[in-house]
Image 1: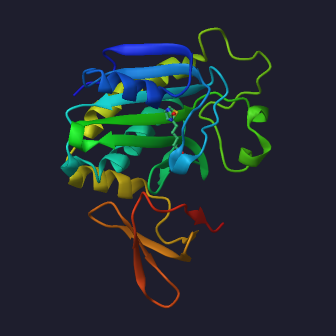
Image 2: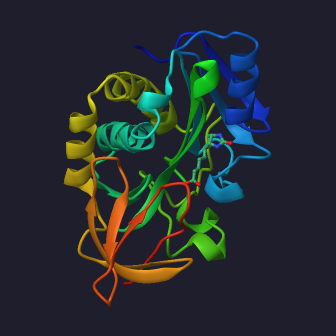
Image 3: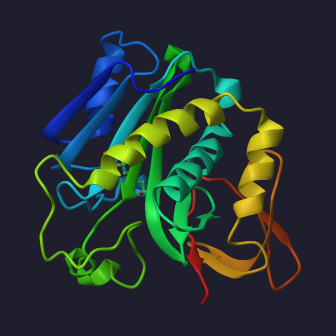
Length: 245
Ligand code: BTN
């Protein structure tokens, strides 16, 4: 399926995911994309707020419809693979993935994914935030060591009216790559994700424990080996992972 038609762009809105959900409930077709220059209530995973200075980021929500429960487990892995491909065409970067769906450049987060699915109603909203051209000094102090941007600028000239040029290019490329990856087989998604996986072999911790990440299993879960030798299987919805550096 294709993404990008229809396309609703907001100069400022609460959350593109929220706008896409409202449009989905009103019967919008699959392929709808909602974007914004600025969000006042951008949503991240686990109830976090999503930081994005106006005009410097791709703030994107695509409506996948039809969508069924069988496709649900691997969709959160297919989307970041699509984001990696789009990002690598926008900038000279190599993207890797921090399971379940953070996109990293040089071990710093450059994009995040928030899928909000209603399989019983036959649709899912695919939310993607990509830091395209955030001036280095514009990251808040708490994100400076862990976040980055595809085209980091020094910000002397500010963001031009209508947004940074890389943002429009990122939108076009994401529409294309997302269309391909939501249609890919489970095996293709898993192989592509594993090829970019940044965690396996590394020490990680989560709310209830720590261990060494071993593999992404065929259901898209992360298998971790604890110090006592026990293997734990983590599901994407449950955990906040920290990587030992
Ligand atoms: C994460 O926590 O890593 C996921 C972040 C997802 C943010 C994007 S920005 C566009 C879309 N609209 C939202 O409110 N959230 C997603």
